[in-house]
Amino acid sequence: MIFVIGISGLTGAGKTTVATRLHQYLSDPKNADVFDGVHINKVLLIHQDKYFYARDSPHHKWIPEINFINREVLSALDMDKFAADVCTTVQNLKVADEFNDISTISESIKEERKQINILIIEGFLIFNDERINQHCQLRIHLYLSYNVGLERRLKRNFKHINPKPEWYYEHYIWPMYHRYLNEVPNKNNLICLNGELSFDEVFSQTYDSFAEFLRK
Image (cartoon, rainbow, N blue to C red):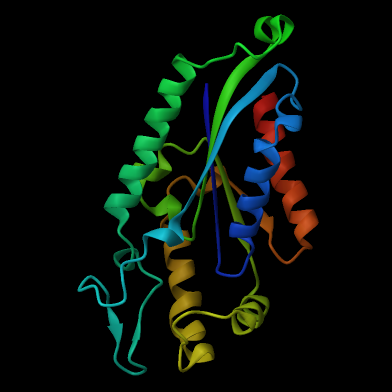
């Protein structure tokens, strides 16, 4: 059985941190049997940020007012490679599921527990490409208010420093975030969590959402 979790949200909402923590927790052999009736085998994580085009790529759209790349649009990312890697990973997990070596699992677990492989996908635009969105059984979105999002953005360090970070946030990050959020298909199926809560609270709610989905 393959289970795919998608985690999206505004920049600074904590999606990468939550996804990484969830991956670490579910990958720990000590937690392989934390869910009744389920044994967790492989757990993989894909970050959308890994697919930004290089700075000198002709795919980028530049903002002339500040001589800066607009990184809030799908064209800033190699979405074809991202989608292909997601599809390949899902297929590989299906193959691993079919030929899974469970020789180290006790006979009682073999008989009583369903074996699952898990893929976690995180990124700010993962639900806006149907090639990726179609794989996600559980879709989680972390949101922030304008002011908290801006405050967190200003505290972060980036390789390429935006010369006008507040201006960029107001005119590009915030409006593009809402534009793409409005374009997400089947938004009623999104589980929206408050990213302004403490990390432990956000992680707990994410984990509980996953556990509840498995129970159903």
